[in-house]
Length: 143
Image 1 (cartoon, rainbow, N blue to C red):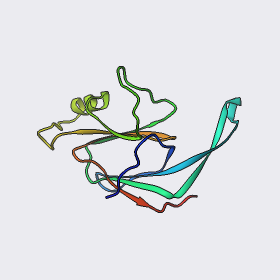
Image 2 (cartoon, rainbow, N blue to C red; image 1 turned 45 degrees about the vertical axis):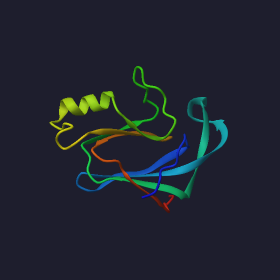
Image 3 (spheres, rainbow, N blue to C red; image 1 turned 60 degrees about the vertical axis):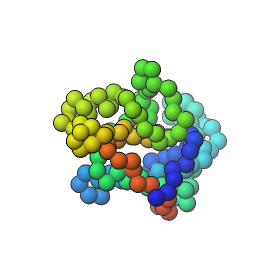
């Protein structure tokens, strides 16, 4: 298993899906940001330049729940400090509360639940599972 890069990086999510029932696969790619230019509605924008040689695949073999948010609408929870890395575990969160109230999953069954938060340039992903993701470096396709 590969170590996920530490620190805050410009990551771009290029793929998310379930290759099998209840198995989650996510691909992120490191990027460089291009020069600033005028974007839609006159707002500043920067081109995202992906590096296919710096892609990572994260796989949760089993998950309890996951949610994807458009990064434009995501916000920190009250009292939540900004993370120093793109991928981290949250011990307490509104998402964990939601999963506890909307499922019969508990720390006893299927086991101690963890909230994995992944922040990228284009998505915020929240995954509740009993195990960390398997991480490996891959060569990604850019379309």
